[in-house]
Length: 92
Length: 350
Image 1 (tube, chains in turn cyan, orange):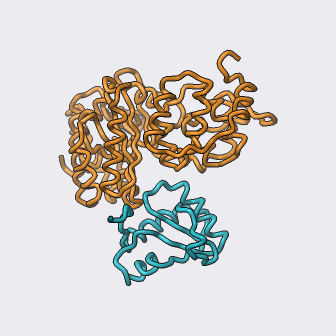
Image 2 (cartoon, chains in turn yellow, orange):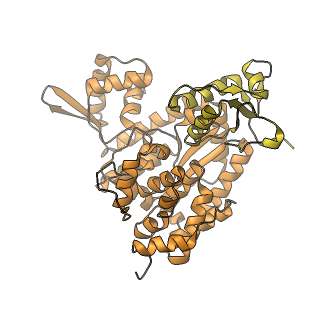
Image 3 (cartoon, chains in turn purple, brown):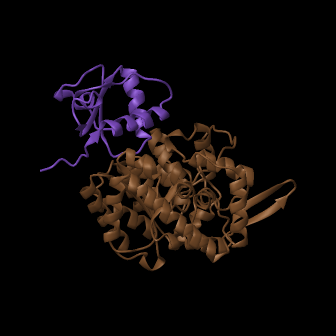
């Protein structure tokens, strides 16, 4: 069965990050992980989920900001590089 | 329609009730479209005036321009402008072309507008405003429409948040003095279906004496200040103990409720049924905002408690809509809410 998530290419991913960036109260550090990182590096053409990690405080700000930006992406964010399946974060 | 005429009409239509000077209009066109020259704007405006599409009034040294909403030619020109806007948008965004095709296939109900189309498409989302005729109110049309949109959403793998308003709800929100999402949506819309009917609705509202004023800035309920929350809670009959009346901007009750849910202050969230019981809310708008900002579950729980203590057909329809959409209810503390409602005289018979 095909996934219900859309495929997100590099230009759309960058446009999405630019929109989120406009709403952030200040600069934060966000590290792309997995397919998201590979898409940004143009190793992969597109990704279905957007996965990020970063310092705990920055991830909190990112999640809070994203809550005020209605979107149709599947975005996951973990603090401090934690990304094991046992600690799967809620989708934002 | 030439480029200058298109740009003038596009710019004026973003707030059709406002008078603007010719140099102010030129600046605004430049901001929206990149280039504009005063001489060209003036020349085309003069022609549009003779055709009865805009009015120009002399005030001191400057001339103020506004759309002539009383003229049928204005509606025709605005419709033409909308078609061109739509063509340009759909040629740039393939996903929106697919959305347009899917919506065109469905039953034609009334004007359908896409809000902030390009920004939302980047976020894999479409925000729709559907203006529904009064004859479709109360029956199964609303639910059929919601079901259709859910199917389109699944087919296009795009999130769709839709606000469907019947004539009465549309006019009452348009006439409201406070800041409300409808007036903000209208300044950022592209009409996908039936542009002539859309502008006729605006014209009819104007003919009924409603002051047409669109708001250019979108309110993010998550960013409504604490001061404005206190001010509006007080305005809707919930004066917090110890808070002073210090003024603030007036927001619609639907925006206030969404803001309270997003902020997550338990005490204020418990006030929501009390203010909804004491004031008339547009439940279509409330449901739309709660979906848009992801607080449907919390709202569902609160509305269920409210429905246990208040007979309101609109509330029942809203609850049915939430249940049919498969929203998972976040249970609310009924005992505590009832206590708050009693304290604030929001229970029927108190």
